Length: 183
Image (cartoon, rainbow, N blue to C red; front, side):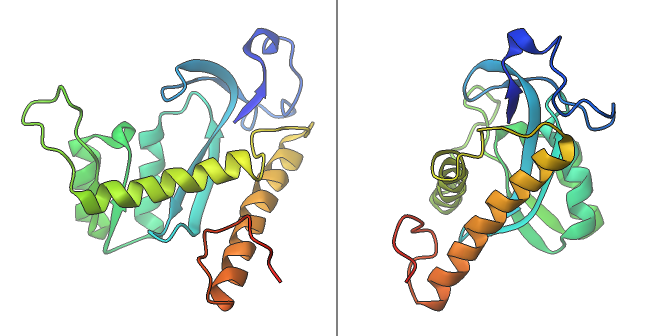
């Protein structure tokens, strides 16, 4: 979640009122770009409903979010992307909370096996959910000047998505069909 262009990061004052919450430089592997801002870490159900999320500085590695997960969830399967590929964290999650972390193997990894179709299909649903947040809810567009404003903006976008999903569920429609009329 970019706050400003990387070239402006040295003089940017947006969200910089406190060192603990100030943005930082990070790298997005999927887009192969560096950026200045935050990372959104989220946990959602297989249906695509958010259950938990957190904002961190962009320089914080994704795997550190797993430390928080083990306190909030237990006895479940969590699907992660290749950033969460760590035997130590997988074992820690399982021993602490009986959480099984399913992560696809890298193609150049020793003993490579393709991930099961069920998990790949579920990951696609999750990736589609993030694409909907970016495209339809324009979560990447930032007009906030303070971290509180930025946080509230992200929270309102996720809440709006969840409310639309709830209305679709009440009306017996596909909960992830967000472009249809709600009436």
